[in-house]
Image (cartoon, rainbow, N blue to C red; front, side):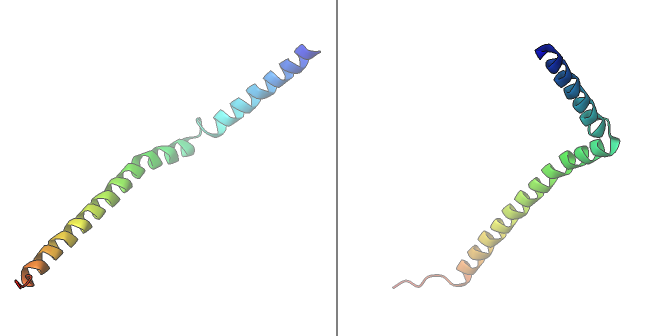
Length: 75
C-alpha cells in the first residue's frame, strides 16, 4: 500500500517536472526573455554607477571653481 502511494507520488512529480520544463526551459520565448534580462541588467547597473560617478565629479569640479572665485579672506 505504501509502495503504491509512493509510486503514484513519484509519477505525479515526474509529470509536474515535465510540464514545468515544457513551460520554461523548452519555451523559446521564455529563454529569450531570460537571456535578454541577463544581458541588459548589468549594463543598466554599470550605466547608473557611471552617471553617479560623473555627477559627483562634476559637483567637485564646480565646488573647486567656486572656491577659486571666492577665496577666503585673511583676517
